[in-house]
Image (cartoon, rainbow, N blue to C red):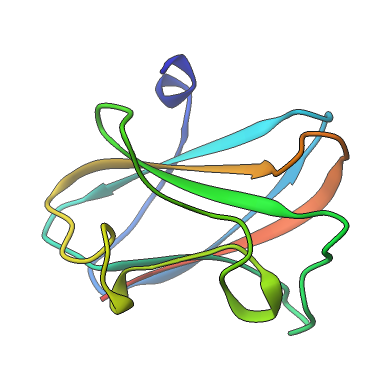
Length: 126
């Protein structure tokens, strides 16, 4: 997957929470982020709205989590708070007890038909 080679690196430390801001522009744009884990971690990756309001159902976004080889481990488009996309390793699944190494997150507008002028991701490690 060529897009993984150009993913933006997110610096992380153990037991972290970090915010990443982005935009889906132009229409059809996908954003990719690379995280590198130095020790086994459980992750939560979620789209959030800083004001706590629900995500706009007219502008759904999806999160996809890949391993270093580009294999999809998890995907969601509305399972989090307020209908926002969320991948939660604390409740089990593939983001629980991830081994050290590189992983990738793709953020996209689900139907690839509108611009998202700004979004925020919260990535938490336990």
